[in-house]
Image (cartoon, rainbow, N blue to C red; front, side, top):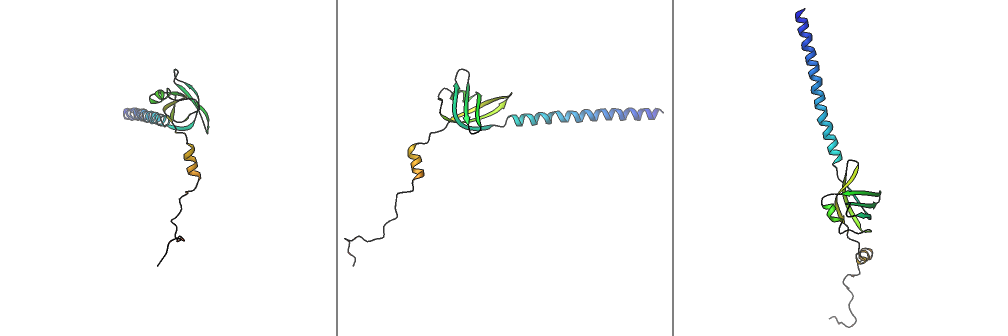
Length: 138
């Protein structure tokens, strides 16, 4: 009877300790999954529609709609040189249910000469093989 009691106590101890180990293993894995998905940067190209330098916010209208961002780091410094209507590239991530811009880069506007060069074919012609009327051949 005494041996049976000891075996039962050991089994109960082992059963409780393995549940604790399994539960402890699950918690860090869940935390890692949450931090990696939240830290993934995203990008948006679009036009600046609203700008507040003092508050550090900017709104950009892209192909997927208009999004408002809170800026930090270098993006906050970029707000001072941006103007409404300019084309920008925004690198951002979602933190605490807010879109946080970490980078704002002004896109160069396409110049008229660059567009016309792309549309028009090359005007240079191949060297002429015809002989001119004034030249004599022996």
